Amino acid sequence: MRLKRSDLVAVFLRKRIVGHDDELNEIITYGDGQKLMMNVQPASGQVAAELYGERLRYFANAKYVGSEIKENRNELDGICLNVAPEDNPDYRIVAINTYSNHLNMTLERIKQDGKSRSKRDEPTQSETR
Image (tube, rainbow, N blue to C red):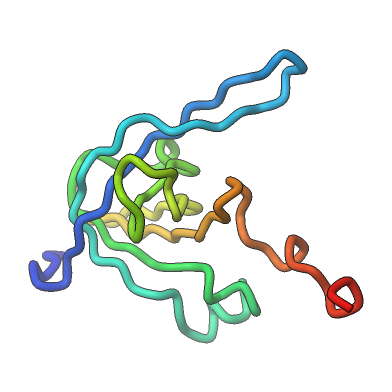
């Protein structure tokens, strides 16, 4: 599969580095950004809606042709899509599916504090009153 050049956007892959603090809590930082060209689209469709429900708006699908990203190696790495390469990533790779000559990836938006956006992180109506 060839990706159409006009559909490609520049993103920066930032590899995940897991460290530990004094109490052995995980501290996640990201390495330097590496520029890649991907086709990124919002997640949509009936299957995705059933999988993610209301969180669907926080997911995107990406297609990539190249050798910098590998299945079982780059899951949870950061992607700088709408932020500068030196900022913390705004998306992380959740799933990578390898096809004959391209990768399909599912990206999830990351909150600014580093946690993923999930329904359990959002306040309920009773908490906001």
